[in-house]
Length: 70
Image (cartoon, rainbow, N blue to C red; front, side, top):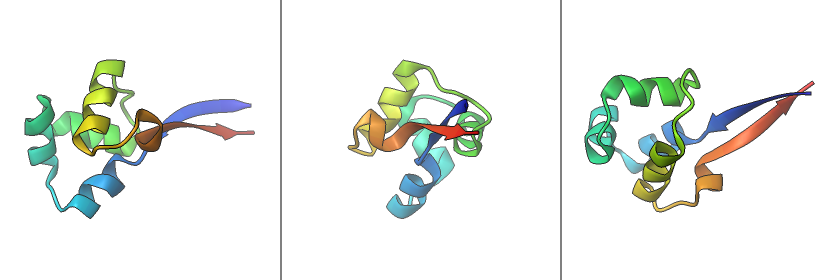
C-alpha cells in the first residue's frame, strides 16, 4: 500500500478568506512555498507544519494527514 502526506491548507486558507501571500508572511515563508504545500508538491518540515496548524488554530492532524492508496 502506498502512502503519502496530504493536507487541508487550501481549504482552511480559503475558508478563512486569506491570500497565499498573507499566510506566507504570517508564518515566514514565500508564497511559492504555500502554493507547493497546497498542491501537495512539497512536504513541509515538522516546524513549518506546526506553524501552519497553529496559524489556523488546529491540531497538526487536522491539517496534515496520511492518505493510503492501493
